[in-house]
Image (tube, rainbow, N blue to C red; front, top):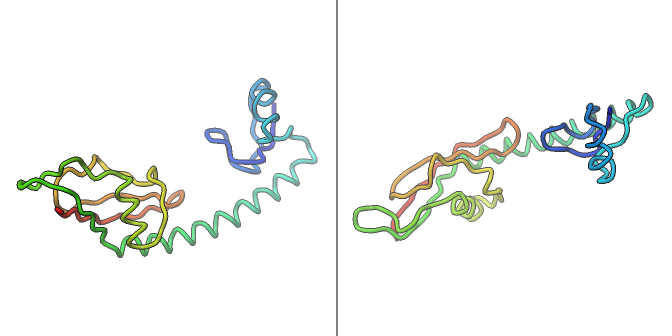
Amino acid sequence: MRVLLRSDVRGLGRRGDVVTVKSGYARNFLLPSGAALVASASSEVQAQAMRRARDIVDAKSRDAAEAQRALLEAATLTISARAGTNGRLFGSVTEADIVNAVRSATGISLDRHAIALAEHLKVVGAATATATLFDGVSATLRVEVVAK
């Protein structure tokens, strides 16, 4: 069954896309939840309007993400944590700690799932993390862990 997506559906498509799905999926989930409409010849005009609006919003979001990337890459985030005499932390610095440091240093609010660490930071010193701001726009964060 061909449907026109009214909103982004993870793993299926974005707003304004006309996709083919199994009829049960459309009938039981997409149509009742309002995420899609049954595609017809007249809905193609509506799909084009949705894609144009989506492209305009994406362009604005991409520009905002580029500006945020410049701010984030210029800043060095300092996180203080309790550590032993050998420089090993009592615990670790996680993505949530980095998000809090970003918010206090730059005022930018990020989701903790946008931060990528190879592993949690467990020693005092410098490290890097990656923040995904938008599709295709990511920033490299410099993190400095200091002992309290």
